[in-house]
Length: 170
Image (cartoon, rainbow, N blue to C red):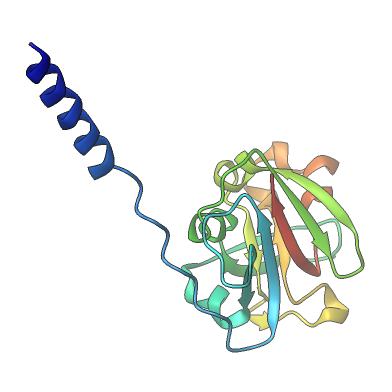
């Protein structure tokens, strides 16, 4: 009877270690100027406990575009960049909130569920052009406001942070 229990325990232990999560592959260091730093509850790093990304790294992710009206422009603008969810998935981010900070130290908290629920984009282009710092660049977290009436509200306008420099996953 004891040998059956030992066999069962041994089998269960080997199955649990066989299905244990593989360690995350390291993220290559950026070759260009760092435009985004991500810290907090992430599983992939390339600088201590942080992940730093340059524009080429963001450009290598699948790119998505949408055109939407914003409260900051008179005409609809086309925004292009990776989806926020793709950035979070790349870094194996887990949490409930994203604290986003801009170059001018503006900060906003974005619920993690917004990233997948609304197809939020980390725009690196507006109207197919890189976004200069003077014009809210180089990165702009933007919601597709015209895709849903509920997004045309101050809550989501405030979460659309331009001159994005960092994300902290909590």
